[in-house]
Image (cartoon, rainbow, N blue to C red):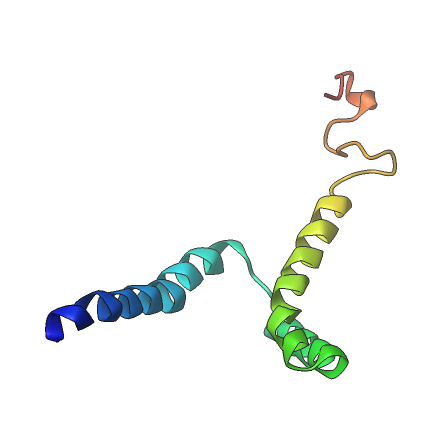
Length: 92
């Protein structure tokens, strides 16, 4: 009976360590989000869609932040603002 419990227990332990320590540690250095914005996003989406909204609030916030950051790096013509025609270089 105990040999049958080892694989599920190992899975639970490894998944918990990865989900609670490893992934937040790695992503925490790259993605910085204001905790107030996270709270407001969860409150808004929970008000709008209930528990499902609370579940998808942070992924939607991260996706919108990445899109807005990518758009802010471009000028009005959809080209990267760092490499302009004024610099004499072609834009790929």
